Image (tube, rainbow, N blue to C red; front, side, top):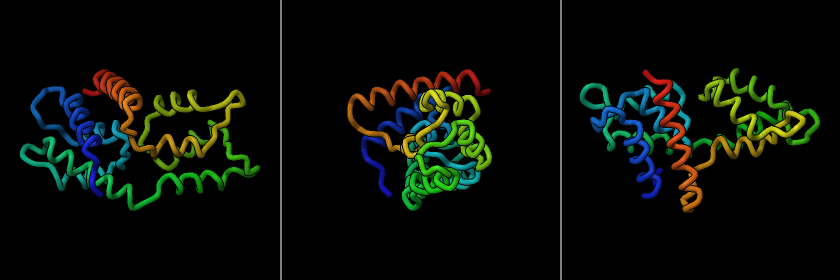
Length: 175
């Protein structure tokens, strides 16, 4: 699967943000953070596999390697309809067929399947999308989780702000 020119530019920008030492090379952990900041969600095993195929000297990845990793992840994501699969999984627990589940139940499920999001991020997400009754429209949640970045200016600006938040979080919690 080929990445759009705009998406590749955003990936390069994310790479620059996460390359704290400004060496032009990042480690496996940082590659995972870059990919996740751009809406890709590699498991630890996928990240290890992809990193191994693109890592160069000193077990680090340069921009070209990061772009190859993103393409590999996009191809993998494209081969599976994660959004539809997640919706189907949520439907199993939707006994009333309402399209909604308790936020606490969704959090529990996400922990059980080892979804690549930490507890604070999950709490923040649930606070944003749950209604006053503490339930979540799981179709909306699935769309949010697997949404590809839109290239419209307003969405790009919002994405840039989110990347800055991720960078801030990363700097506070890494190393």
